[in-house]
Amino acid sequence: MKGNIKDVFPGGNTYKGFHSFYDYMLPNDEANRIFCIKGGPGVGKSSFMKSVAAKFIDMGCDVERHHCSSDNNSLDGIVIKQAKVAVLDGTNPHVVDPQNPGAVDEILNFGEFWNRDGLKLERDTVQSLNQDIKSLFGSAYHFLACAKELQDDIETLVNQAVDKAGLNELVLNLKSELIDELRSTGRAGRDRHLFQSALTPDGRVDYTDTVITDRFRCYLLKGVHSKGASDILDMLAKEYLMKGYDTEIYHQPLNPERIETILIERLGVAVTVYDSVNDRAFKIIHLDEAVLPDKLHTRNDMIETDRRIMNLLLGEAFQRIRAAKQKHDELEKIYIPQMDFEAVGRLEKQIIDRIKSYL
Image (cartoon, rainbow, N blue to C red; front, side, top):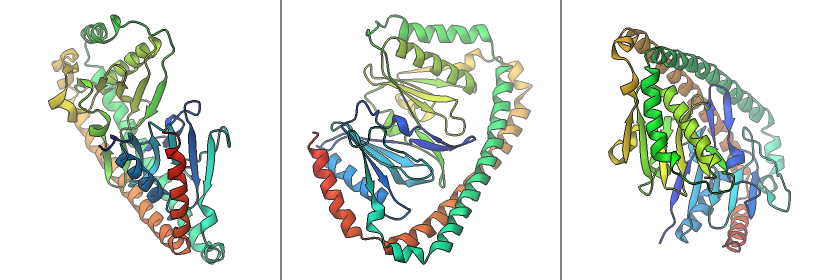
């Protein structure tokens, strides 16, 4: 029987630039081993991780596949849950260095397998492409920053139409159902932060179906008051953590200060804003019940204008992220012919055998 697969993003293209949650892939004090791959584009890092992941999925292990937000078809990392082992890409923009070198962390240097003399001949092209990529991402982040300002304005306009007493009542009822009768575990809960969706060259891509599976009792926060939903999720997460329950917190890709989903695996509970779970939600909390229709109606034209302009800004950001990916593809074409992939394959077999020893 094959293991379960969970697809997530450990980092994302946000209004702040690239935002990393890489430290939460696998906590150093829980890991048996963390392999950190160093090397340039096209050296086989993602293919290496995909192959290792597939091997352990076939063996029945549960595996997290951590996707790259700059190329969602590539992996930035994998976590083999039963072995407590992670393999991750430690190169730019998500530079990762060993915290406990040798004891837990280990560098896999794919630079040992390339033809240095061949790459020296491509020096100017490599430098030029890297500069283009940096410039394109910088431009994309300017557009994302502008889109975030429009999102802030929408949140402000909606908030002006919220019946605070009505919202408080909804929150208290939800807290009563989920938290108040829950006994403390007597330990400190551990928080883990990730993205379940990201802004990628293919637009917004999300993996909600692999994150919120049927084994979770899912509560859906539905309505236009998105900041209110984020505040509720933040409050619930803090309550679960105080009572000692490990909590996974999934952040909005545009503004990582906003929360979109929390998971409490021990309890089998998920609370989310993702409408894709609508048909299988255990309960839907309609936040619009706390929105005053007359007040919202007077602001609808401004909200729609904000949304239209925000979507245009996001579209321009996607174009630049897509262009950066095309430049990155050109870089890969330079590195691929200079790689000894047979040596990479031999290393892969060695790493698989070492991971098996932790099962």
